[in-house]
Length: 415
Image (cartoon, rainbow, N blue to C red; front, side, top):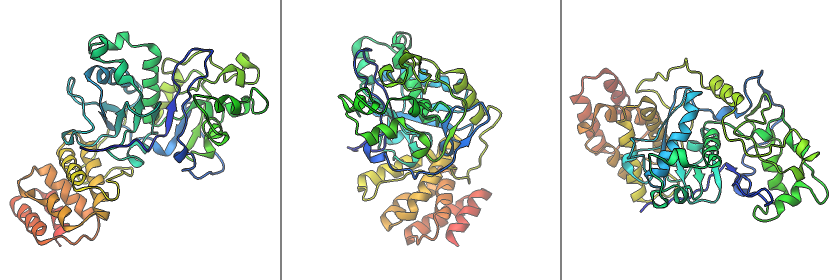
């Protein structure tokens, strides 16, 4: 049994409640509040973008695999259908797996996933863009929709046919919001050009500090500042553009903590339920449709990928290698590229005899894609001392192939 923990959570969305109640707001967890180094200055765009994590966007044309920790096919179909709207405006594709057999994060045959949806952690949140693979590994959720699996399930009378039509609009908006984070969008209320931090009341009985200090949020002042203050102080790659209070990424800030109440520019009467026009322009700009993801089987990913945590068990190691083999043999270029990067990075720190023998065992009987992926990863990992059994299997693979790319890469390893 694999044990997972959602220790890397970046952006939490508010839970809809009655207007007179104190709303549960999306808040950066304490252990992540000070991970980024403050910098000065700001990278402003010339009009189309709203607010992004500029260094955390995916390559245009990327296929993003998405898997699920739990949930039946009903909730999985709801999430897949709603999140897909982003692909209408952005040159990104979400691959949730075949209908009726969506990817299961706990199953090695699902391979690795860029976005991993959980339902058991507190709140609604998502890591931002490529942080989903940089700051959390395969055994941790990168996006959480607390209790959605209970609310929208076959047990509650929903079906895969009717769940999208019957789901509450604000629930579908939450899915859009969190997948907005997953493709790189930051919170709009922290956009320098909207400047909501200077619009909130910070002194007296109606201060934003006192409001969020109450249950259910119970935030300390530092957490209030981290989650409502200027993003640039905590997200050095923050890029601010045109202010957009209609953005799906806009925070719902209560009127009683805003100067001027409902007349304040940062006040919205209710949660934004749809992707705004400026949201569409942003993703179209950063993920242009005229860019094709063209790559070879010798390329590596353009971003850092987390591997196994230190001290991983032998069971977890075998699961990791099984997933690697699945992805190295994928029909999707981006998936194979990520697998090579993940394996190369892993081998830099984990290259003991057991691991190397497990990786190369019967390699000569594997598919060409798997053989080439292993050869590329070994050559990119640096100077690794291979055990005799691995060398023999690699030599056997070399003698059986006539493929030029494979011959070249095996030659690099065996030299």
